[in-house]
Image (cartoon, rainbow, N blue to C red; front, side):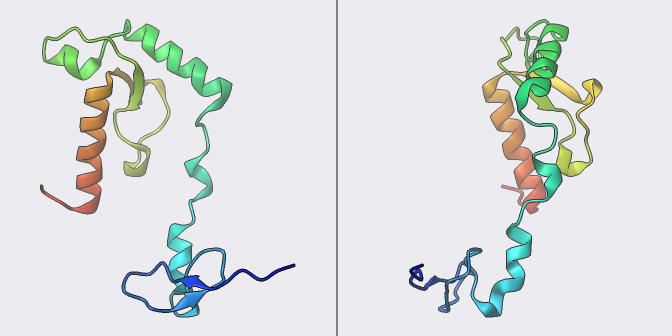
Length: 121
């Protein structure tokens, strides 16, 4: 089997080369663990059970975006979102899910990402 040519290390500012699948040189191989997703990240997402739950939440919320509704706007919801995201300790229970429109979902996700990175802007 042919050996793949060495690639640059994925660590910032590292000039090292690697042939490892994770993309880090031997010096930075410990960082590969941080890049590996935990088994729980794909649990309960996608597939028939999630589609059923998504439809149930959209019916419960009458197809309206809940954040918009709180502001007095009637906007059709096209997605289902976690009120408290999984990374912050939220669950997939019905009381932690809400119907949401795409602009609200993008804004909420951006805010959660900023908070997660500790960025104010």
